[in-house]
Image 1 (cartoon, rainbow, N blue to C red):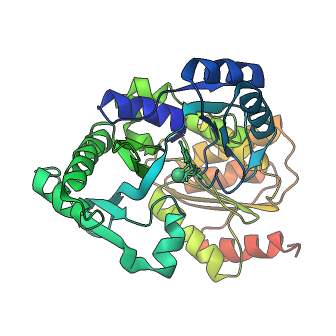
Image 2 (cartoon, rainbow, N blue to C red):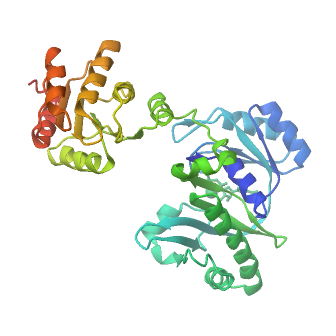
Image 3 (cartoon, rainbow, N blue to C red):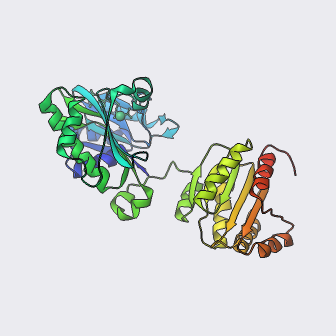
Length: 380
Ligand code: GDP
Ligand code: MN
């Protein structure tokens, strides 16, 4: 789950990371009132779940009340990377002396938290990683000890030659590591971390992604959820406890188990198809899950054919078949459905499906080839 900059800054502030004071507004009038309270100049910033707001015109300086009103009005009318701006953060502007990039994420290769810093702060870090990777300095942290003060100092000295400043930046990075660790974040990023003309070290921007699987430990972070830009399908899937990842293709995939789901996506690709999603109905037997799964999938307008791939173990094939029929009773599904069922109670399942004129194969290869053909408009 991603949270907004202003929310991440609230979290950062709780851990003692310096930020400049700010308030959120949903109208230009409100933005002007906040700006007058904060004092000029202010920066008005689009609050959307996306980076690159500056480049998209979503971050603007304002020197007086009228300008704060105008900038807020303009930004609230914007879309940033397709996302409508519903709120802006009004925050005190600072004079920047230097901008540094700091990011903490989980590095799956080394199985450790990884801190990345760069003196090329303020700009798109993905771009820096591509064009001049040597400008990014990395530090893997041993999760048993956490980030040690000397490591943080050594790291920051590589991007900040002034040792006293580097030490103060290092203290901030230690706090950011605590945020990352204690909040179960998958990403904490400050871009830019600035040194102001007055010599202050502050987080000018803040980005946080949280590990969805740990959110039940953090009700205060769960409360930051803003799902207004999420599709109805993914909201429904989350509420019903199904793993759903939307992809770009046109073949809807309903599968039990993440391993089988990944193998299925690979096979769809292998036969020249493009999966529309990754949808895992999990390992329990519950016809209702099939109904939800089909509701989620048919809500995606790109889906041209549907593959149901079930390897019955704890999941019973007859329950899946019943769920499928229940779903067909309740909704009209225009896309062709290809079914592969094998394992527990597969004979019963096939009998249930046959009553309604549906058939199922036991061979995954055959099912995938069939669904790829159907998505391309080839009728069976
Ligand atoms: P992003 O584009 O979504 O990453 O949004 P940022 O919060 O990083 O803002 C983009 C850029 O706006 C920063 O890199 C700064 O150069 C500039 N900016 C943001 N706040 C201030 C400020 O208080 N003072 C000045 N001078 N520039 C700012
Ligand atoms: Mn930024």
